[in-house]
Image 1 (cartoon, helix red, strand yellow):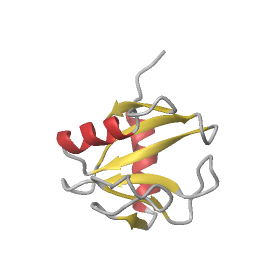
Image 2 (image 1 turned 180 degrees about the horizontal axis):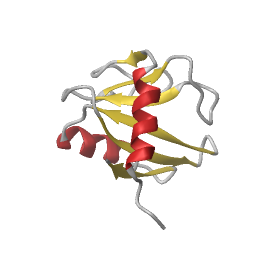
Image 3 (image 1 turned 30 degrees about the horizontal axis):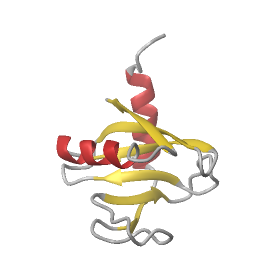
Length: 115
């Protein structure tokens, strides 16, 4: 098994740089279906892309610039799917929040892969 090499991150950089980032769930707002869940980091998607759920590729956008920091690989038992979420400009604190967000229930688990 190999660690991700620079070509993986270069392709991801190219995808993000050629895509418009849409923040449809800004930090501090509630989830549309689960009003008790408040986003602690800006969340959105890359316009005109597609992920496993048919929607745009998900992104978490932090407060530390525009570089891709990491990805989260997620398995969701309720939706019965898996996908990646791209972390852009996230501080270490924001990465920890995102990791905890995707691991706080028994129905969703994720791993953080750092660049």
